[in-house]
Image 1: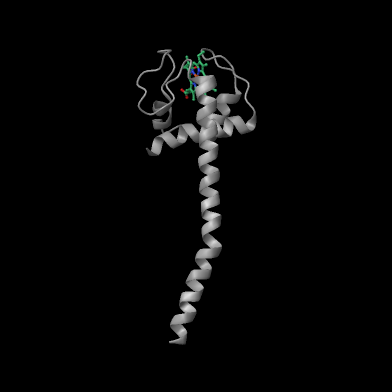
Image 2: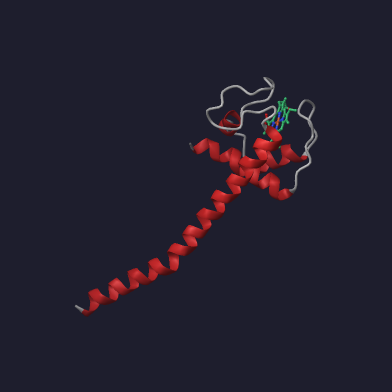
Length: 113
Ligand code: HEC
């Protein structure tokens, strides 16, 4: 009897302590992706399709972000390097580290959907 009560107490305590942290973390993830999408919409969508079901990009030379996400070579690091370097075709766009992180999260998230 006692043992069961204690078990319940611990389960409840674990839920109370753990749940807010989990919710907070996923909220932070969501908001960085939302920020990434907003940036992509403002800065990148002139050339790239930015949403999963957008079809071909406006600029046919620019891969859709869902196609970028599908490349096995696309990682947080490779996107960061690409967005910081000069390219031959795509214009160099100056972004802050936070903007690069947000856009990279947004692009990579297209892979899982
Ligand atoms: C003026 C048009 C234009 C804009 C604006 C633009 N891009 Fe591009 N982007 C291109 C073109 C064209 C390519 C393909 C040629 C190349 O790789 O340079 C490309 C390629 C890419 C690639 C693929 C790299 C690879 O590995 O093949 C990524 C990632 C990318 N762009 C991200 C972005 C992001 C993020 C933004 C917004 C911050 C952006 N682009 C804005 C034209 C554009």
